[in-house]
Image (cartoon, rainbow, N blue to C red; front, top):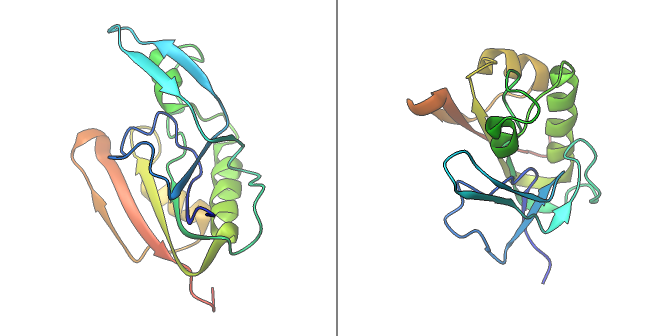
Length: 157
């Protein structure tokens, strides 16, 4: 059975209730394990190692795409925050645009894209200028200023 859901940068699958959901193809650009500063094991174990800026799937392939890219610009390259959440470089605008465009490309018409962003270093207003799509709706949490946004790809988009 072909999977209908793509998590384009799954990391440690922290927000998934079912981290082995058979309908989800979990992707990330790294496969690694770390012991965090508090002794917990962090495991990044995607089904496929792939860069979200260059997804190797045909156009209009997935019904649902989840895009939770790295959102931090300030942690050191070897910090536990970078290991846990990834890290953006100075090219973050280009990287996020490429990543969102790729997620949009592989999303089927009438498909849904869920985009998760933390405003810890970069505001959502700046991200929306980069991706140039308007979410249908979203929700901002109080913890870490995380914003969940929902997009739908219509045939006219």
